Amino acid sequence: MKKFGKTIAVIGGTGALGSALACRWLLAGHNIVIGSRSQEKAEHAAMQMASKVGRTRINGCANKEAATLAEIVVLAVPYAAHQETLEEIVESVAGKLVIETTVPLQPPRVARAALPKRGSVGAVTQDFLGESVRVVSALHTVSASHLGDVNHELNGDVLVYGNHKASRQVAIELIKDVGLKAWHAGSIENSAASEAMTSVMIFINKYYGFDGAGIQIISEEDEIES
Image (cartoon, rainbow, N blue to C red; front, side, top):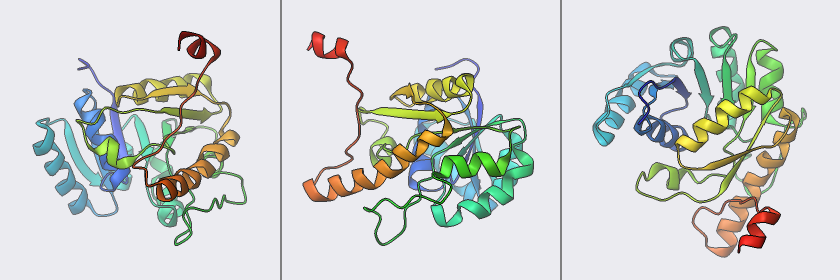
């Protein structure tokens, strides 16, 4: 466990992916703030998580306050609520690192890629929040159910996108803390690749009856070793 963890606000921390990430980071020694449109719902989720994992460095707040309290803000909201959430937290994230996990899924056809006109949610977020905010886009192809089971050994890799190498590296270290390997994958524009891949993973899971298909990066060195 880290002696001095970071303070991370998980906006959408009551949902499947958000709560799973919050739980993993809490266990890794970070300070967690659960963000929700409802403060009552956020507080309840935080109390449940603290009881579940036996950690107390967690609390719940309305989205804007959660973003204000944190040094790193993670967006894990449904696409339908994405723009509203950006408008809610924009004043609270100036100068901070924002990790964007939102995928532009369009129910009911979630197994069919449908990217926004801007190209990716990551790029939309960077444009809206402005250059003072360092947006990193990641965690699009990770199974929320596997993450949510803290006893499940995680497999698969995560591609990390953003316009600032140092910010990507911070996200990579946080992803390592949840038990996954992460890779620098270029600018925020490249986030379109993983956002579209989410729909591909959904299709593969359904077609083949898999539970949480993911991706893995194989290097020439890995092939030689195998």
